[in-house]
Length: 596
Ligand code: FEO
Ligand code: CA
Ligand code: CA
Ligand code: CA
Figure 1 (cartoon, rainbow, N blue to C red):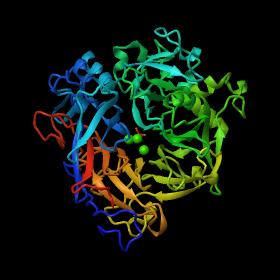
Figure 2: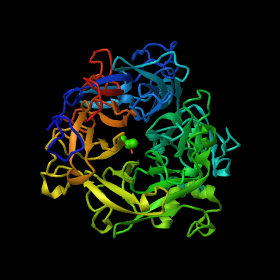
Figure 3: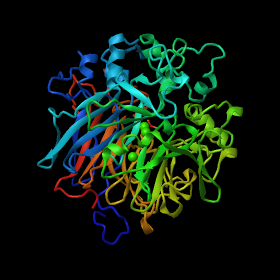
Figure 4: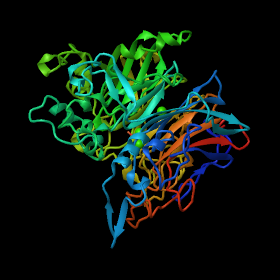
């Protein structure tokens, strides 16, 4: 099965055997090389990573934690030299700080963080821009590159678009409502057709603590987003994360952030026109008429799929003319009808229920409370929409729906057909006339995920799919240069099935449709993000988050995996090194295009 001949599959590689162990594994004939680890130096003056002496000052010059989105911005059109842009979604203090967790008489206790540790967390969030080059078939970072940059949860940014400067975005520190510090929980993202870097702010609720003043205007707004959750300790040291002290600060998060990676001094911009939700990502494509379409998932049970269509057109010959395209356009939310048709409903002030009768006085209000606006429009409540990826080759759009076990019988609909959707599914959208800017389309379920050998799971992988090839919990995905779909997972790790998260090749065309093959799997406890193919399809970048995070009982002994007791020390395998989230470059040993 290494050859395509005789099969209908678009992929030719020998599948990896599913399993769980301390290392990562890639298909035979390929190499998976660690390119960037948490703490790796990004500048000539950056200190070497020392986990026992880590500081915020060091962290801000080093690669951040929990790499998620990976994008590649070619320099001079090259596939072997470019900027790698990487989101650092969140921090795992129990895996980062030696001695933070103690186990006494079998009782696990995590201590309070010091201010320095909180500052390390703040510096380990955000993103990295780093120049990389491929020399003799291997990727390496260019330490001296003028493009190298860290963006953190403390970097100065600007609010732009319809909500910028609105009263609800003003704080004591920023009476303008325009200047904001930092970006948090940057999950997936995108690279625009004009080669800017998009960071999506996702689970922002965890960073805020405290209690709104009684009867505060943002009460319903924050409740809809689960703010505050208080899972981080930042509010103990910084008032802006305490909504009792700075009630509007949380309105300045939950946006799509655009960064000009080619200008290291550029101020990142929070583009309010694309709405405020728990944004998974923002993958884009140029429509037939030159407008640009961004697809946006809002990752929560019963939340929505959105798209944003720019008002202006992309100009491939004038980069400067594209730089503010994201400030003007129309946000839409998806309604998946039972008959397989799809309507994109405008999320626009003054239209339908989005008026003062429902508390909206402007488009700024609509955008600040995007979810409540979409509720009123009657959009379709989905099973946790994650990455949404357009495919220029077949005119389709792929929606990863990761899972939702709380739907229950009466809320089942055609687009979310399982009452207890433990393994997720993938929807394929065909926009009307193949026009990504269309306001109508059709949809069908490409794949219901899970173990096809268990009838009640109801998975719909093709019969060609082996026991290694099925997966659950689709999260991120990529379309390679040949137009093929690759899916990575979050939560597929399961001791009962002996599986981890990984990267799967999924056929979408012809008789092989819904056939899946395992190409790469992560070390125990890890989650797979990225994935991203270089324009020549000769490299796949993947990002492994939180290896060794064993909170979900991976080995059957209920053993949490803390710094002093790790289930894996990947990728260094040294006793004085913690496990480290890392970006991996996958190439063919003999060179050439992947999966062919
Ligand atoms: Fe950060 Fe929706 O995963
Ligand atoms: Ca994700
Ligand atoms: Ca993607
Ligand atoms: Ca994830």
